[in-house]
Image (cartoon, rainbow, N blue to C red):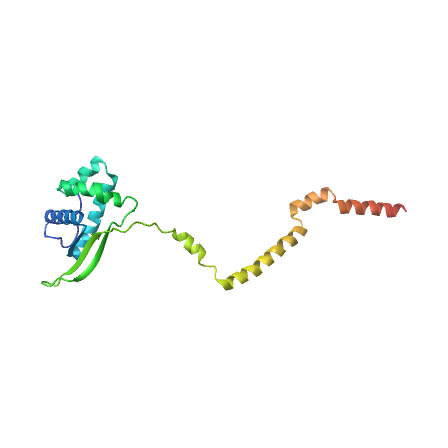
Length: 190
């Protein structure tokens, strides 16, 4: 059994709230935008987006699930054939809430909730932006100085042999050592 939401409900009872949201969703899908109170718009947004996600899947099971909440078959057909294909590439965020002035009679905060009609343009991954950012011009000069120091360091290390190479070097004399030994041996013989 679903846990009822805490606090005040739209309309008083849970059944009345479900009917209000169903009617608001029907009107939203039929007209594309509706004007209602901010509280109703904020409650309707996740409700309508879940219905659009079901419509994007487009199979019979999801159509029947949507028909449980939206009783008008014409609106459900419109949702599945016209609205859902426009959101095929969009991963979410199908609706937009725009606040407008207060209602004249009771000063209730009003809002317009509408389906997003702009083409979806995926943005570049944010990880690339962070990699490009820390390369200011003064730092480039410092890195150039560091690069020259790094280039000189391997030449020094190349002259010094590692412990493993020194063991191998002791076992087999290099050409210079062999030549030096020959010369020494030749000098002693003279």
